[in-house]
Image (cartoon, rainbow, N blue to C red; front, top):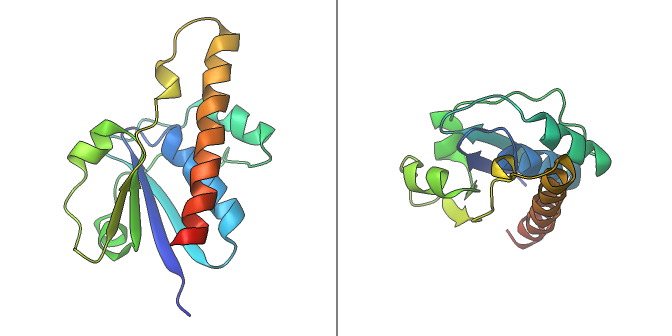
Length: 138
C-alpha cells in the first residue's frame, strides 16, 4: 500500500508546523511521508525545539522551508495551523484534503519566560493530540 503524504503549513514554519511534523514523524512510522513548510519561512524557534525535546521528539536539526509546489499538489492531506497560512495557502487539487487547525501562535505570547513556555507546552500538547487523531482517521 502506498504511503500517505501530509503537509503541515504555517506562516513561518518555525513553531506549530515544525511541532506537528516532529510528532507525525515520530508517530507515523512508515505509513506516512511527513512534511512541513511556511508561507514565509523564518527559522525554527528555539522554544519549540526545547518543548519538543521535553516531549521526547528532537526537531533541532530541522530547518524552516518554503512551500514545495510538488509536495503541496501531491499530498493526501494539507493541514494549516494558523489563519495566515489558511488564508494564503495556494490552491490545491480537489483530491487534496484540506484541514485547518486554528491554533494560537505561542511565539506571540508575552509575559514571563515561565508564562511563555507554558503556552508553548499547551500548544505542543494540543498539536500532539490532533496529530495522533489525524494519523488514525485518515
